[in-house]
Length: 299
Ligand code: C5P
Image (cartoon, rainbow, N blue to C red; front, side):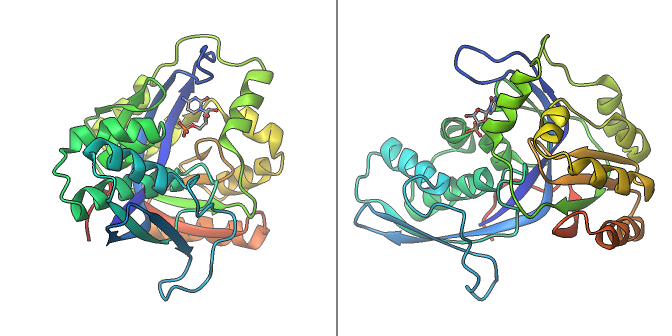
């Protein structure tokens, strides 16, 4: 399976609900920073997970749980229960490219991959719609990572509706060395005053996507979690400023951060921005990504 990362072109966040979740109005785009999730059939109803950063299986990733807390196992268990087959199990091997705890939904992407992979190796025969229902129980971003492309997310982010969009977009992705916890960023958002009204998707952003206009899109990027992420990680301000000074069409924190995204006009422009960021030593790594790309799919 190949599974994409997501970015939120806009992330509108409303006041926290009784369930502890925040109502969202977001526009997702799937980008080609992609993890690989391999599932091998077991017939004893058990699951194992190993996570690597290199294609040759070296480079163990330290801060990802490989037990039942792993989102991949949670997703697989939900499907196992839904199919009513207690003997269905799998060994998962994940090759990580998506930054861990980076605000790009890497764990959710792997879970989306696990749902599609297990449905295939177990002969589950569930439709995409049925898998999206299970996906929403795993995490708010998981249905979008099955879907891919560009879509509006509402509810907690799990209700997906398609968006009319044109064009392909170049991103420069500044990856931090230490991740941020999504619940902590939402808690900081509440502490700083929280959302006051029903979130909305900005009309100029949808217009720019319809027109395939990267300049319009760059100007319309927005993220209501920006202040909260900056409050927890003040150093991200410098990263944003350097990419902006280097001529990015737009800059924003990715989801709950701490990854920072810059929209570039093309690959060469992206390279220029990446060089400025690398020279300023404000982040651990800089990569380029393109979107939109499809959701979780079999290789
Ligand atoms: O849905 P997911 O498990 O990815 O959410 C992780 C955490 O992020 C939640 O436990 C919650 O603290 C926060 N969250 C939120 N509102 C959302 C989505 C996530 O407060 N719409």
